[in-house]
Structure formats: structure tokens, C-alpha cells
Length: 469
Image 1: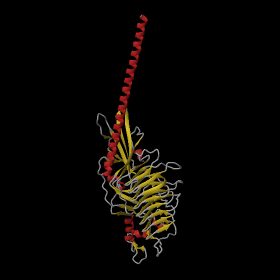
Image 2: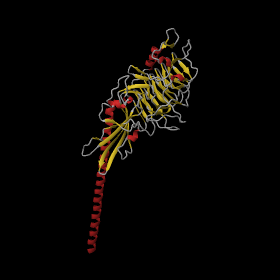
Image 3: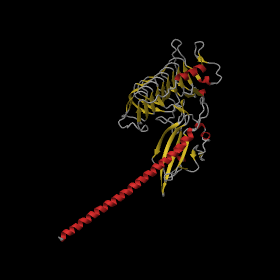
């Protein structure tokens, strides 16, 4: 009997020990959950503070009023921000503007929340320049701080470059393709994205159709993140397509003479613009134009003109290019380099359109080809009919294509620039398309937030000037 009572005591002690362990474990778990909840609260609050800085940037940029023909936001960011007392120039001569002399305070909910923000035009003086900014939100936590850092890109009010594939009709690309940029059809869209093989970069962007988007997405795409994959949507709102015929009519009306049945430049050209136009030789019977060599800038052209042509507030042409004009159809296999090639009729091209002038990417770095040569995207091809590119082009094509009718590519191609068609876009092979500022073709915009991303490591210092150098 006595030994049985001893066993009961031992059992009781074991039960008590287990209960104690459960209690300690529950207490530690509660402490961990409390810390996790606190960390989450600090992190969310720091992100809210960073978003407050983004809102300050948006308010300052979108408050700018653009008047056609007047200065743009980035032609003089200091003057554009003069109406905002919250922004001051950074004294290091970098052209950056910081918000407030002290960190912005948005404290509340028992927490101190501050932010610092800085922004700069990515390419000052350029009509299509966007604003790049950084905002760092901070919540102090004793000897430590929780910080979040956001990078934003803002399109100021005024004009923004066409950097897309846009068709008033259907878009049909049956071959395996790589797309980086936005693609929109006011009709139906059929597109296949390349998912295997030798591709240098994945497809990203937004692919939409006002009709039906028949879209073959990569297996690893969730369709929700246009920054890492291509996302797609049917039934999207129609996007106005600027009329190439307006630009053709402008050139014909102001600079081309056909009163005697012979196409030539009008005289005199008092504004000097007409002296930068060549009327291509043509067959009087068929009206078809011919070329005798590459269409390039003549040596006397220099750095080109700085003429803005605003066509009914629908589109603006930065008319810096030398213009080759054809009054009918143009059939050629010659190279186009840094010029505007315009035809009142169709344009049929059997080669690649390339340029060799310098241009900058969104981070302000020179764009180079595989051999490190500087390249640009300032070739503009304008057709009053259809544009037809025949044959496979192994060379990369740098140009903006703008047609009243269809744009058709027969064979695989690599196009850096934009394609704007009043008809349909058809690519009978695959296409590697990357949307890039053409430096010539712009659309009116009221201003918007182009995109934002959170950087993984906000750092331990509130000094942001080094991010924008």
C-alpha cells in the first residue's frame, strides 16, 4: 500500500511538470506572437509613412499645368516646383529636389512616423522625361528603427512618348514571341508568348484587347503581376489611336507642291523647315517611289531641327528628323537611319531599319548594341496606307512605325521602339518587341503614376541623394 502511495506522488509530480511546461510554452508563444504583431505594426506604419512621401511627390508633379507649345515639367523642374513650398533643391548640384527641410511627420496611433523623399527628372529638358523619386518611411523603435523604401516613376502632365504596340484593329502574332511593354488592340488579340529556347529576357507588361484577348501565357505566370510576367485582359476600354494621316497632311499642305503634276518642295520655305525634306524620285506612271541608297541624314543637317508639331491635341511630333517624302507607294530594301520616312501610300521594306545615334534608357544610361556601339530609337516610319516588312530580320530594328492601315511583319523580327497602326498589326513569324521611347512621337497625358516598387533594403541612413546620381 505504501509503495502505491509513492507512485501516486510521482505521477502527480510528472503531471504538474507537464502542465508547467505547457504554461511556459504558451507564455513564450504569446510573447513571440506579440513581437510579431509589433513588428508587423511597425512595418506597416513605415510603409504608410513612405507612401505619404509618394503622395507628396504626386501632388507636386501633378499640380503642374502644361500649355501646348510651352515648357514641360522637366524642361525646368525648379520653376515647375516653385508653387510648392514643400520642395527645395539639393545643394550638391545634382538637380535633385528633396521634400521639406525636416522629415515629414505623419505620427498617429501612438507611433512616431516620418518620411524623407527626393525626386529628379530622369533626363532634364526632354519632353518625354519622367520623374524618378524615392521615399523612405521610418518608425523609431527604441534604439532601432523600422524603415521601408519605395521607388516611383511619375509621368508629368504634358506629352509622353509612345512606348507600346497599339492597333485600332486586331493584333495577331501566331509565332512564339517575347514582349516587353504594353500591347493593346481595340479589336481582338491573339498572341503566343515564347516560353523556351534562347531568349535574353522574360516577357513583361500589360496585354489588353477591347474585344477578346486569346492569349497563351507562360506556365509560370499567375497573370497578376505585369512587372514580372505578362498579364492580359479582354474587354478593356478602347485607346484612341493617333491618325498618321494628320502628319502626312501637315507635310503635304505646308511643304509639298504638286500644282504642275510634278511633286517638289514649295518655294520659298521661309521657316527653313522645307529645306530639310527630300522628295524621293518616283515613276510618273505608277507614282511608286525609288531609292538609290540608305536614307540617312545629309551631312549639312547637323543636329537637326527642334520643331514641335501639335496635331489637334491628339499627338505631338518632335520634328527633329530629316524627312524623306514619297507621294505614292514606297518599295525599298535600303536602311533607314535616324530619319523620318513618310509615304502617302504603302511602305514595303525588305530589310532592317536601324539607327546609330545615341539614346538613353529609363535610368539615363546609353543604350548599346551587343558590340557596345551607341544606338538610338529616333527613326520614324509613317505610312498613309500599310507598312509591310518582308523577310526575317536578324538585325535588331530600332524605329517607331506609324500607319493609317495595317502593320505586317513577315518573318521573325526584333523591334525596339513602338508600333501604332490605324488598322491591324500582324506578325506572321515570332517577334521580340521591346517598347522604347522613339524620341519623335508623343501623346497628350494629364499625368499619372507610371509605377512603383519597394526596395528590399532601405538602409540605415535617411540620406537618399546617392540613389538618384
